[in-house]
Length: 279
Image 1: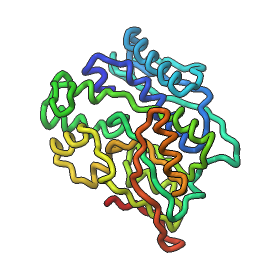
Image 2: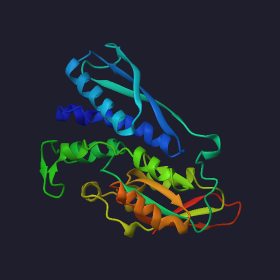
Image 3: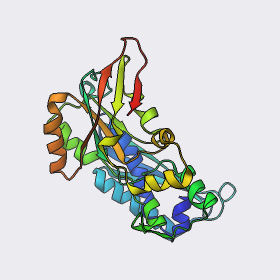
Image 4: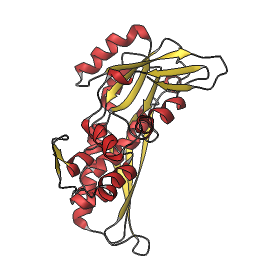
């Protein structure tokens, strides 16, 4: 939101809000039904509010869930005049025996990655430090390596994976899914893995977008920290049986996705804590 203020552009923030909620929901196998928002401000600016709500509506359209209500609160004693804060709440539905909780994951399973649009909604404290505090860049700076201004790159909306995933779920069993958000590969993948399983990620199987190389270089960030902080070009991970990989990838391609086989599951000792290894 700080970058949105710098750019004077607030219409993608609402999409980010919806995306973070519905993408977290879909990894459990649930279909989003309804969405509510909370919009807190120091002093209500109708122009900014209109842009934000426009983005929320667009996010709901993309995820095919209803925007059923929300709350707007003016709190001048808590926020500065043009500052605002957002929260979202989504409800969804899934049959109890169709909940995806990772319990079906086993050795030999394959990990498919779906591409992100860029940074999505995580790591921005570090991004602001590198770009604005350390280097003094402006959001209006055009960067050849990004093929756009810095502000345009940083405000690219988070991808919403609801419809592609639901289309695949109609036809195939998915053993586990991971919304690759804060904490990156190292913190998010273990949440879905059963004991005794290790996810091995081949980082050479895809090329992260230029923004990640830009930040790594400008911030002199160690490789491990990049994969712990950012999505590195993979926004959603899907764990499936090996024999289904080709069909599932073709299905994703048919709806405009670019699936990439990025890793596999191997076995550890039965009681070993779930692990992630990047190679």
